[in-house]
Image (cartoon, rainbow, N blue to C red):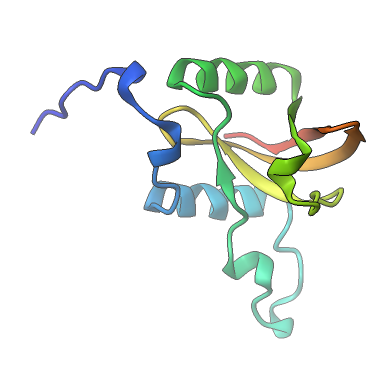
Length: 133
């Protein structure tokens, strides 16, 4: 059965379901390639092995998100800027992992927060790519 074509402009990024099988498969590969599952098996499963980090897409449209992902993958790093009120005083810690998705919700990179700068009422979150397929 052929999938209907979707107008990218009609997709609301806040409606993308990030908890799907493709995300779990990506996390299994990313964990392995980034050597995040290096603990010996006698310790048992760790939280990192059991629970994938949060997934997110950047931008207000599919096109904006896809362009952002392309730039991040080309540079192996990126940053976002958001109002401080979006964080409610809880800023991400350096080393925090997350999965960057494109505008369609497809996981494209495992990223790690490398720096968080609060300047006035803006928060700049910098990150580096840890793994990309």
